[in-house]
Length: 536
Image (cartoon, rainbow, N blue to C red):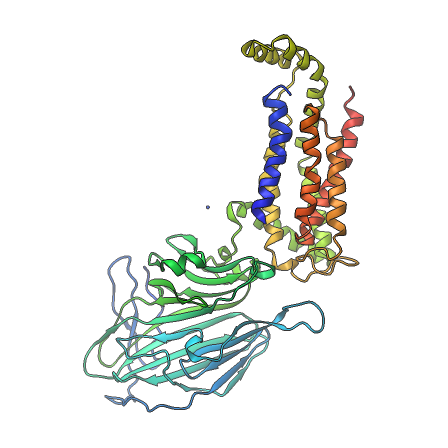
């Protein structure tokens, strides 16, 4: 959809101006989790490599621990103000997560957004795996609680522990806050044997891939990784053909749709490698590997992560640190789109309506660019005055192209007309337009945000197509009022653009249509003012 809009805008600008004016007519130490009763020592790594915190095992721990017998898996519910999560003791993994502040559909019957809902243990999220330490994804852990309920800023932890066949005590410790989407995760390896144990911890994020028609929040759908100081976005079809891998300064690994995202963030270099594969058509596996761990007898090593399951709200993402706000892909227009989003949210505080905020931003942008557009239309008006003389020169030098070009330039010089004067000011505004387009198109703030009357969701299309049709009418009026020196055939072609734009905008979010409609109305008013002040 965005490509169609870009092509349509560029074509319209190109036809309007090019024909008339050119021719006559974008490793430090991971945090250790040492037992409280013991002093922490650390194993240093070479410069640029990650190191893992090492601590003595608790004194009460026996010299050797026996592998635990299989237990029955059970569910542990964690309930906060923002989400409800269900963890399973099988894999110490996440099997369900429901957001409380967002609905799938509008109205009292709308169901909460479900980001994870799996029944098969092999499909759970945040599974741990390590062949060297004897940790299998299906391991049944002991859990420290049956449930956890947190509100406001209250904090709590949920600890899972299991003893592996290698005699390693492995713990997964989740930490929660009642008023935050962020979840802390510590993976801890305690070596109770007589020999050093070396290995790598793997955190497996499994995403269920469903077929979507590219509508609603699934217009954006797939993984991304912040690695080597840039965000890398991979297409699901490409991963199915060739696995993707990132191992340079990995900051986070994410999977997102248009409005919601789940992320595993590194804490002090805890992610050494991310490999993405699609072992089946309906699943994506993100294998997130820790740096290599070397745990001497009687010592404990740990790595930390931060987990985020929540909305792609620019303010909330920025609060998480780790450059998480970059998970929203604004393309080349990010430096313009982000300030516009902040402006939109600022205006909403006073208007209480994002539709009104969009209209105010449109007014402000129109005022900022008034000098440029005024100059542009004035230049087109001046060019229109020269059309009879241009026709004479064309007839006079019809067999002498060089002579005609020289005469045309003399004509421009004599009448002090810049042939590009109508084009360049408009081109300057294109980045701002597309920045606003991206801001409105991917802003979760507009999701289910009402305007007035029949427009109850600014992120959805107008259900009765009223605003796109009115927008098309205003675009037609605007073109009829715009000075042009095109020949009749070209002029008729340009009059077809409002029809093309109208059909294209029928499926656009109503927030975008409102912006374009208001911008057209303001342009018409501006053109009327120019027509009165610039006389023939």
